Length: 199
Length: 199
DNA sequence: AAGGAAAACGGACTACGGTCCGTTTATATC
DNA sequence: GATATAAACGGACCGTAGTCCGTTTTCCTT
Image 1 (cartoon, chains in turn green, cyan, red, yellow):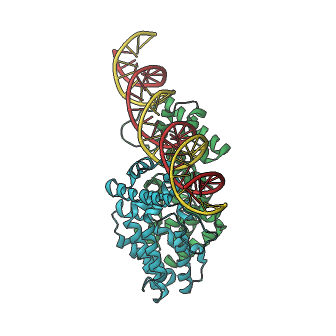
Image 2 (cartoon, protein in one colour):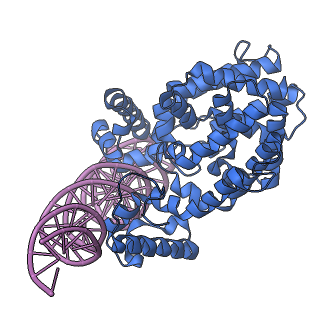
Image 3 (cartoon, helix red, strand yellow):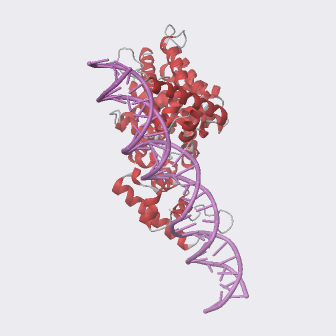
């Protein structure tokens, strides 16, 4: 992930200095190293700056906050998943029945959240940061659309949130690591829930 | 709330020094003052110690952490609610149909979480603190019992968590304050969800 | 009432996230 | 190539949560 604006057609030609991009890359790279070596908790902003060989201010300029660093770290996975459910092959992508897509979405999300639990958890410490993130909004839109296509009549906005809530990375982590449940248990449970709502 | 052990029959006679109890009370009192005056965010541990007229170490000894202070602050409300759903009058307490009790529980929880959102949110910043709390476990047990009584056949442990997740204080706060939904919307949505599962 | 052990106190100290602003550097223009 | 300007840099600085340990206080024992 670079600092360069991602949307192709976005307004005035944003001038991005080469050194800024290079630094962002080095920082991100260093972040991966630290996380791999010592875990997400060991990733302090001071250490990250030191390992990347830049000043602390540079890290904050590039990523805004510690949460921003983790967001960038998980960005690739999130983008892939997003691409998969928006335009990938069935059953996750278009082409399958809405209900099947919904079930596949939940399974995928649980797996993704479970796999990158440490990163996602560390990145979501901000008060409401968890909900304001674009990725979450895209997810919500997608789920809402599928529910509508399933012919569900209830308040879709609230229902969507209610179905998204149990997929939360913190919760998945807690249930799998502290309570001896498996990801499959969670997937089955969520599927059962969805089927009783939209089946 | 005092530091004195709450459970009557718990083990050896725990000796509690009078000054410790008195200090805990003063701290809690000061905490209420600060929160009432300037809001939950303004409650720093240094300020709390200063306003209570004790050392900072004393605050940590008494409540363990900032989250602990907020937990103590909401304790009364939580206890009342707990008493209401465990042994109060119907429909929340015993005597009503399980489904009605479940619906009443959700409505009550959303209302409680909405009302004390600031405190509950401030108190739950810890990584997994949100789930390890006794109150949450009691709630989970209660919901699981009601689901069983409703004749639900699914994996009750997972289903319980999936139904509890949307009641989260952070989520309730976000949906009501950032998304223009009302608590009634949330209550209706949750009830619809539960009814399609256990109705 | 005196003595002493255990518990509680207090505040200096550490570590961390985040900000600020004087200094440096890339790039567009001439 | 020289110059100007806006952007990026860096690290000292701040506020906060949480720890540590020498000192003070309680209260049980005799």
